[in-house]
Length: 138
Image (cartoon, rainbow, N blue to C red):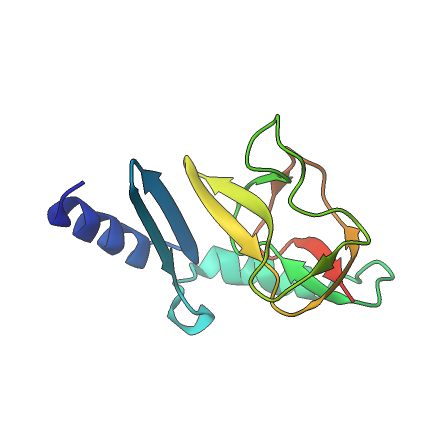
């Protein structure tokens, strides 16, 4: 992978609604992340997100980790692997909880704080919406 390819990927992620991107090719690992204030949100996504915010959440005491984009949720990096986390597992800030695949790009969902996984709110392989609750961390 040359510098022009890397710059093309950076520009594509910057122009997209993705909040993160990870690519591993040979001995090269490329991870890009955007903070929420730099994430582009389309008008229809704002409407969808606002409607979801008004929906009552199920009874969970913990902090809800929501999907940053539309895609397919995966609990593990491959079907043969164990899930990243299970209910009851202790997690550290930045630890990978799962993956949301969008347009063949794997986006790692990370814990935003230390805690314990109270519940996993989606099934492996399930399509998820922007802002959909994925995990409850207490």
